Image (tube, rainbow over all chains, first blue to last red; front, side, top):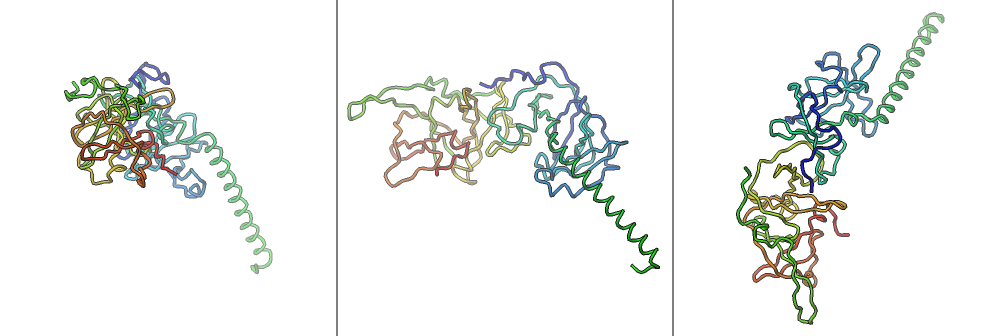
Length: 187
Length: 169
């Protein structure tokens, strides 16, 4: 029988977490996994990802120094169309960001309880489990599943290919211009 | 404190009871008890050994997920119990508001897990014998047989088939 024994995933130690909101639902993510919480300034939409199967959840990028973060729209990811993003959480060590409706506050949580087996959908990868915050069960998100390593490799490779294409295109344009100048303006 | 309806299956001492009955052909066959539960105007049955109690509504807690028929979870006696609303499959969207939760067991591999089934009224225990469907009648994929009561034919629900969406071929 599934009792509320704590899951071994995070043990029963107290953890500091960021409590965030998407589509009216609360979620927690371990604070150690979040590198920065920022506004939407500098968040650039990308559309080419939509053609990649399973990657339509990646809707934006954020450049931070030399790093490029691929940003997941949490509303799409959690299938909550009524979400309205206002913040982005940049995840540590992952080059991944998540768009969220809002950041509520920092909280402490203890035991993480496994999802009942009856949950058989994508939520099994979305969450590490559930935790109790003031008698409310709140999902603890699995940061590794927003964008998997394989998906990140696809995104990086596609970005690289697009950069090369863009550079080639720019070189072509420059060559055509140069040719035009040399031939007296007749291209 | 959690309210409990006094007439729970557990307190009646019939949950899981299995008796043997004489058939007309002289063979002894196990007869099971069934919990009859209403969904609107229709009643359905679950094997009593799979039902642990009938409970008043607790506060349903919800979070995003992608599993069909699950509407949320309850916390009961320090357990997280998923709530599976099977009314849309059994009677469509017309079922009246659910009043109670029938807490039933589901098997997952070698483990059993509790599941709360919202029902629309009082439940009843019956020790009728389950029968195959009448000739020329095809049972829905989720029914394992029928109980022929005095004025009523009641489908016996196979919760696993129903919740796994195992449509008959």
